[in-house]
Length: 374
Image (tube, rainbow, N blue to C red; front, top):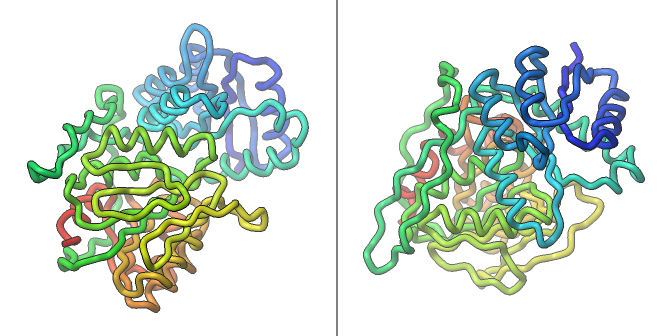
């Protein structure tokens, strides 16, 4: 059965081009269009699409407000488009607010790519639409406001700003599917925590990292599949919300406890045995830039059995081969459970390859990290 899509954008050109690109896929059907957020809400309720593509900036009602209302009335997976430039940090942050509101993925809006390279855009758009349509609708509800973790008086950052919450607009929680519950992990000293994720990752990372205390004893590296225009602003956003410090990684950065370094979009991140970060150009032969396998592989070589790796929601199998190297060296690997994933692809690849030492619900991962690492 074809995936039914509602296309929402105030630009007639963009609506037509997105509709044409998606309609070229025999397994996708564009069932309607809307020119602003109000029309989007009406069309979503009337047409009941499987996926909505939503522009960020529109007259009458913007995309974020529309997404929040749609999640209240008829929860539907949303792919957000946002017009971004290198200087567009504020818009980037607002686009990430949309993920909290219920959107599950996003793309930079680039008219040149749409008009000049439709084949590449078609492949990317259609892949995301199919993946989002197959996703877990139980994960559409926005994250709860995390309670600040206990911190020492000497090490705590200023109180973290509470995460944006839209709980009054969230749909009632669906019954969760039975999940594989692993035993509570044993406390251990790790030299590094490495977390890899993709679709659904921005909200997942926020849920995990806001549970960590400022005096978290291990350095953290984060590998999130994300365009280059987003990563700096995303790191800044996490830094404001979390007790730990978060920044976009730069070449030459040194790992330290209580600091999370986010791999920059479009590039690759590696870590040497001295704890020095290396940022390399993104290899065009690789599908993912940044790539979880590359970072996991580098820390496996540098830290042996002293790494705790976590694989969160995301499409594909990136992270599986890196996790294999980590396991060979004696390190631990955790996977997010299916019930709490937006897309159970990357964690499933870990579980099916028998590489997971533990499988936890998203809301338990941060707590277990805080209790485990000493």
